[in-house]
Length: 335
Figure 1 (cartoon, one colour):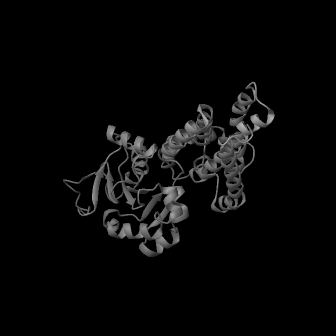
Figure 2 (cartoon, one colour):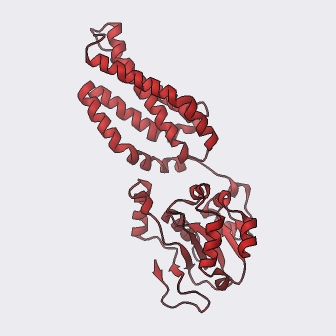
Figure 3 (cartoon, helix red, strand yellow):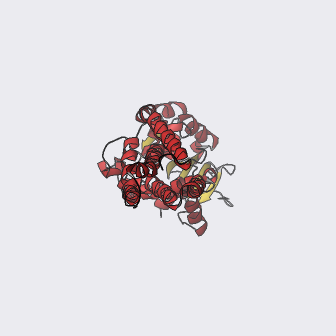
């Protein structure tokens, strides 16, 4: 961002930055890299006060985090609106997660208001915050500590133009949605984050167990990190771990049928070919899906903690059993 070359008299040249609502190629590239998890913690803007368009002392003040996607989503939604954007230092984390971690919080907001001299910039004492930041901000304390009134806007920035007509949010604006599009946005970063470990595991399985076992692993990985998000609402049970067990079993069926279709093998031989991978891949699917709880708005820490204590031991036993049987098979047991 560029600092103002010519600042309005009421602006503080030490803290004021200028921005606009246009998305450049560099912005889109930054968003793409963030979505696929490349340099994840480096996608941030400088915290401080930004002028969007040509605001004056009566212009609205919007608060956001310094994660580039949060900042860019806000400014692009405010086309043809003159406003101030107060950017908090959320360490490059989105507003919702930062609110839970405390970086999008009361203390940071109050300090940023004082540090930017916002009282000199805005003649009013009102701030519009994203609804998803409400868990980290105490409106009462903000008013008490610095005199600014907090107003929570809609969940999604795309609803801001309609919301600003009367500053009232409809029930739809307050609702956190997690539709197919929202879920599919998460797939690239999950795939990239586990790509190298899965590539190494594929190489080991291919060398020790053949192409079918390697293919089984790839299918499990894609199911857990991609197909799971697509099918999430339709997989029975509420717990992510049990959803993963179910998905792992379903993905395993074609491989099991193919193995049993091989001629010239006894039942014990067929079981020794199938059981190690079945145990290992089903537990791996459940483990990967359990780790996706933090990527969704439909879980909470207490439920995740309960799942960890209830199902991780089962996953460990299944994975350990699968590995032991796989080693025994390599030494010819059951052949």
